[in-house]
Length: 158
Image 1 (cartoon, rainbow, N blue to C red):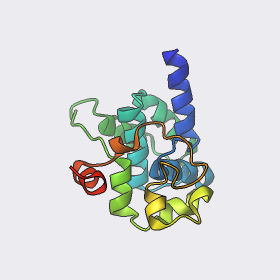
Image 2: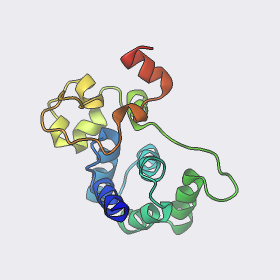
Image 3: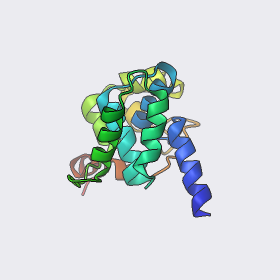
Image 4: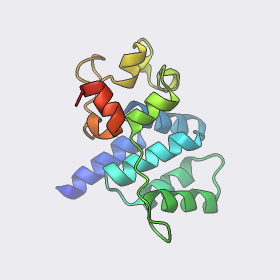
């Protein structure tokens, strides 16, 4: 059912098992330490709200529980802002693989939090799909949807 699929998607996201390296690293860092960078939080929020279509309040509630630096106004305000509700409904859809290419091009961050990628090459850390990393989980969304147009053209051609 759709409800079961939604619950499974949320569980995979919350436990850092989406198959999207940057998002999984962010969630595992958050669960382990109580912290993750603003960029990591934004990418996690983008996948949950834009790709998985889960209500932003579910993400905000989990972050409220997990964040060591939790502030109600900042957390709930940022989740509402990023998901596009309220007075500024811009589409803030981050493409997590393109974000990793830009902000973690050598894969240092994802390698730190994802043991399956520790021995991966830089290219494999960014794109562990299609058998590049044996045993890598099936991504929760198609990896191509996580690339900006220029990055998709560079990877796959026109």
